[in-house]
Length: 301
Ligand SMILES: NC(=O)c1ccc[n+]([C@@H]2O[C@H](COP(=O)([O-])OP(=O)(O)OC[C@H]3O[C@@H](n4cnc5c(N)ncnc54)[C@H](O)[C@@H]3O)[C@@H](O)[C@H]2O)c1
Image 1 (cartoon, rainbow, N blue to C red):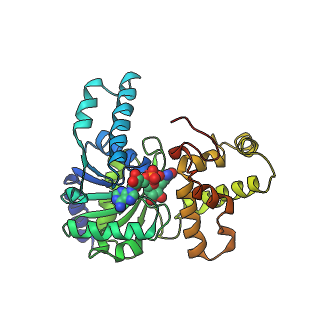
Image 2 (image 1 turned 45 degrees about the vertical axis):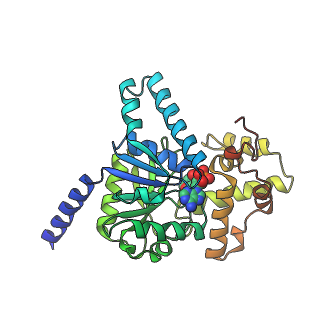
Image 3 (image 1 turned 30 degrees about the vertical axis):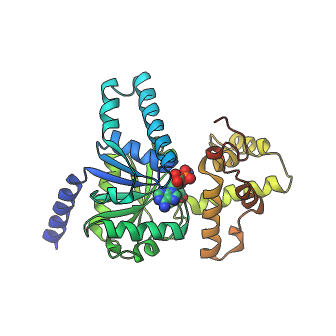
């Protein structure tokens, strides 16, 4: 038994060494952050794909600006900026990610969309490739079930902003094998992250707890109990939090918050998870938070 554990560990070590490249699907705020930490902290080659080419261009520009700002304030050797950027490729087709031993999906939080993406990823990768999802709430077991290799599918839930937040929730699906968990954990560690393994359950730990809090703040505002600023100020002043719940919702993206609340509500079946009607209205109106320039607050582009 001991020998078996030892040989499994050796195999994982070999696999981790081969993890020199990563594919990222979705170049929004999370995919962009994942690309940055993979290239900068883990020295990986990164292939980034987004269905929207303008998002991908914006993502590349954001990474360059971020690296330059690190160099300017002395957190990164100037000579490394170009070297890190040279490892990141913007890809026009999802097929261009096919050779990566690990692909992280960070597209919008919609189950049907993620299932379609994983069906495509399954077709373009070999049986050894690890397919991870950065989903905030959707079942990893369900995502794995649309592939031919559910043992290679895992949840890799980074926190926002990826380059700042240290923790990653690692979520094995029902069929995920040990080596997938070990290898993914090691990659997260190379990126400088601390990993917590969490059971596959709606919203995992973070969003099961965080989202109802944000949702309640939205209901509190909607009922006229207090203004947006008063609600955020009350929470900041009465806790160790640096940001109130409505500013946090704007940072996450109100579309993402609504999608997560819908998953919690439909899968846990308790009305305490009912999405705040005002949250849905804001999303319908295109007020998505920082990413659209307006949510509970207004932002300069
Ligand atoms: N925002 C957060 O705070 C946060 C934190 C942890 C995890 N997440 C999760 O990360 C994922 C992405 O969230 P985000 O905040 O980066 O969203 P975002 O809206 O900033 O970006 C989503 C990106 O996905 C792209 N996309 C949509 N369909 C696609 C497709 N078929 N193929 C490729 N790309 C596609 C969009 O063009 C967009 O650029 C979601 O699953 C979300 O739940 C978000």
